[in-house]
Image (cartoon, rainbow, N blue to C red):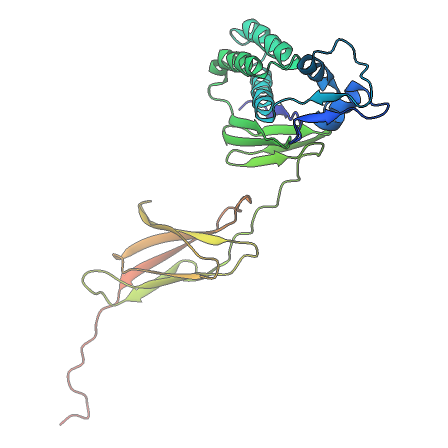
Length: 300
């Protein structure tokens, strides 16, 4: 398995306004940092407003970048940068992709956001074939400048912002607010303690229509759980029951089953919080013969 990947979260934001008035003693780079979250955004403001100098008189009204277009271009650039970092310089078509990325960066700096997004997407497509078998993830930047990284498959992706790095595992996602480090990972939910049947219990039941039961499974509550996933398999691994129950429901009655051995587990669920591995127990169902007693010693 390849080392965990490094993902740099580029955090920028656009305000919901379309114009701004330059303040007293405020430079274009200061204005860009205040409104776009990036002093280098001064080049975007210059291009949008046809300026030839960084010196702008106080009271000047300037146009701001279109919110949706800039966010889309920024997301495409972030994805392309990360894909190239993953693929490495030895990847096929790396030089061509690097040229497309430089083109995208130039378009972005001159506020040509649609062209920047197209060029960045082109760079991403050139290197993605080299990423087969590696981590699959998505990067998006919203209008508030928050970056969300969602990992679908593969090794952990490392998200770095404000000199803090957090790994994001497959099946997880992390949202990094503008100017903030990645949030600390939440501890996994504890696994419920299985109560009944006891471990390796041998349950003798009278058969009815060729089956035995019902059998009731029970477990303890887990703080923070929004439900429980219950999984029951036969000794051969065939699914017998797979489903979820409400957080207040701490038991499940199984329908009558054929005689044999079964294993069961319960996993606590919570949105955005990874569950701990579920404990597993075994139980066996055996037929209990019906004893018939005709008469009694006292019968006459």
